[in-house]
Amino acid sequence: MIDRTRGRTDDALHELALDAVEAGIRAAHPTEVLRRALSLDGETLCVHESRYDLNDYDSVVVLGGGNAAGQVAGVLSELLGDRLSGGVVVTDDPVPAGPVDSVTGTHPVPSEANVAGAERVVAAAREADERTLALVAITGGGSALLAAPAEGIPLADLRDLTEGLLRSGAPIDQINAVRKHVSSIKGGLLARELAPATTVGLIFSDVSGGDVSVVASGPLSPDPTTYADALDVLAEYEIDAPETVVRRLERGAAGDLDDTPGEADPAFDTVSTHVVADNFTAIAAAREVCADAGFEPLVLSSSVRGEAREAALTHVAVAEESRATGNPVSPPAAVLSGGETTVTIRGDGTGGPNQEFTLSAATELPEGTVLCAVDTDGIDGPTDAAGALVDAATVDDLREARAKLKENDVYDYLDERDALVFTGQTGTNVNDLRLLLVPE
Image 1 (cartoon, rainbow, N blue to C red):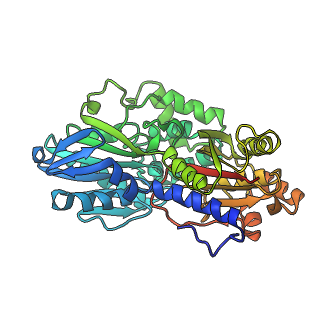
Image 2 (tube, rainbow, N blue to C red):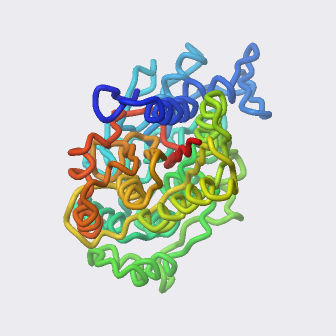
Image 3 (tube, rainbow, N blue to C red):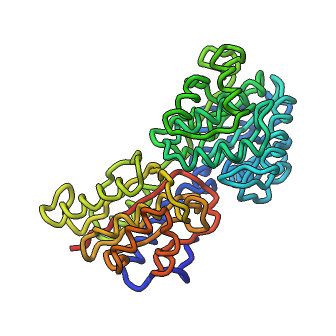
């Protein structure tokens, strides 16, 4: 998965970091995850502790969207065989999935293909009835890939809004509060279209805390946010949203439009959701690789958030303390974290949160330590890199490194020093994964 022909792999510590990160990503892949979460007992589908007698249904369909949705559809097709009636998913990583169509879309900014695919998902949901079992893949990346603009919102305006939200530095729950209120599929609206079908959500969580109402903007979940909340996000982060978006949100806040469905909505009576993988899935696998290599693992948190360059310095401080006092863990140590940091874009360069995280850390990393940070979907920001692998030697020009951080233009700096990590499409998305190795 990780392209070892690109980047630094010239010593054992760098190799260990890549081995551990790769193990984390693989552990969160649908082929691994669903093997543990799903089984078929005769004609009964088991999802965790829930059981669904397939004889009770006239049709079994697979729907959904996100980075991992295509892989989920492929696994379900293999498991269910001719019991599967059909379906459609929207993904940027399609694989053969029997009778399930995989629409190839774009991420992180939606395209016409995304909209067409989302419309097909909605159409299939509307055909479902009480004799339908709908297995719905909800994964990271679904907010962009399941792009179904609300009435009156052109795709061009949705694209502009998406770019503004992603550049703003707002946390993902607030970004998705806005997205839910300019969509005809998010914020529980897909559940409403599917009712009264038996709907089983298979969730690959890419959000801190695992709030399923935030993953892919919660198409199957009650929405605790409102139109007024969405307007507050635009104001707080000074996002210059298109007029069609502002007008819709203002109409909703004034009570002229129905808000997204809440807990009491009967649409959720036949919906169950199962988080089958999350950030800790990846962290745990990476931790095991480090432990096997003789490093004492310490998980800081699977919910690290905030500005990437600032969160990075906290990790540096842990490495310094470990070296100085043996706290909170003694070397050789492996410090792991996950979550989703953000970047408030003020410059006009190229990079991503994990690239900024690593370069910021590299400006102060203790000698001999190694840090790797990647987005588990293989896409860090609007780039072809998953993240980066750095050490203290990565920064050979401190003034230039700081200038690149200020300009949000770290990609080329890291690339020129063979520090970028490339994976291509990984088939999953469970947020960011970071590993800091502190040798003796």
